[in-house]
Image (cartoon, rainbow, N blue to C red; front, side):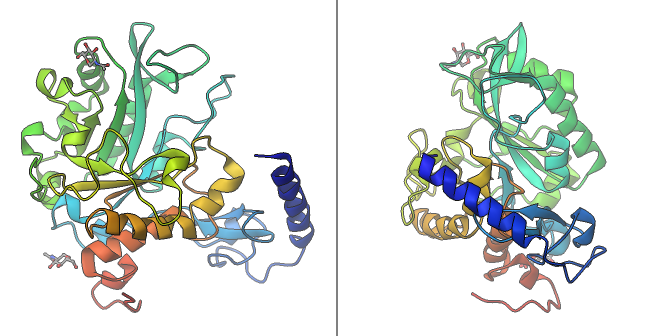
Length: 361
Ligand SMILES: *[C@@H]1O[C@H](CO)[C@@H](O)[C@H](O)[C@H]1NC(C)=O
Ligand SMILES: *[C@@H]1O[C@H](CO)[C@@H](O)[C@H](O)[C@H]1NC(C)=O
């Protein structure tokens, strides 16, 4: 951020603080999205009290939880007919240990999952003879860039899948692990293999995925993708680019009106890949601007990428600081996608039987 931008932020913060003394008109868990709040307890459930000085004045309730499309509608369609909130660098949270790597999220993996994140992007490295989650350079992890052993995060995911038997979690690994069977070993040690979705059931030629209800019934509720091609043959871990297309990540993916594919992915409109992922986050994560990016510009990009993907709505939306927004944020974006995917409406709430939400197309 340049100096001018910084002073703009500062002035906006001062103005916002002055305005926040205005008395709120609601309280005690009654405040709706964008109503002024004094604390989290003032907001309705699924929301929290937040300030986005660049987006609105004062502290207001914004969403903090997903709408569960399986519970709201049903889980009887193929996996690729639903959309999922995805946390970019899900592991890169402040743990109080000094390091040079920036953070991309603010709450723990368990909190992310409990708030409705269903896909996690994790960077895996060989480090100290184990697999670690790290945000680093040239495939090597260092003390100053390491966040923690992968086993800790995988155990949190195991605990979530165990207590939520109807939910499916997808892991998208930027994988630098070179140790033979290094990933396989850490997945076995974490207790996650019992949920493993087998490679042989993943469609390779654009067919639909299995039904979510069948995946749940078979307890095949963990989908893992690696960026290392050879592991599909050696460890039966799916090579991401055989199954998914993705737009450019970082600033290159944030130019309004354009949705280019990232280098590793085939063209977005390659329909031999049944899953579509949209990245929308800055190259260098900045908390203060995330609430803007995660709002209308994200929705606009989903529209742009829909067209780029050959009229396909994305299944995954990857963001930084996923709870920061100007109101509905990434949660609303996922509601839009599920609405489009499940009933052609702009919000999944319009897909429920006997819904009072209007279906706007
Ligand atoms: C992919 O993993 C294998 C081990 O299964 C390793 O030998 C190879 O170096 C890795 N490739 C890359 C590009 O990291
Ligand atoms: C599940 O929801 C979809 C989308 O609304 C609908 O087309 C389908 O018929 C539903 N399936 C069942 C079994 O209710």
